Amino acid sequence: MGNEKRNAVTELMEQGKAKGKLTTKEITDFFEEVDFDGEQIEKFYDTLEAQGVEIIEDFADIPM
Image (cartoon, rainbow, N blue to C red; front, side, top):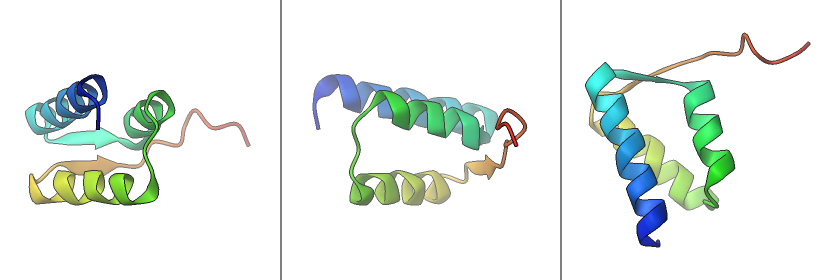
């Protein structure tokens, strides 16, 4: 993983730890900016869970 991608992951993780939560929109927006494979995405979610970061479903912006 490149430094830029690693910095982006660290920033999002720190944001989640500071707030104690991340919304699905924040996470989705993040993954649109970085090129992660399935294994990296799974590891990201596992790390959030291990750090006690709650994931809040936020589907209000999705058109029906």
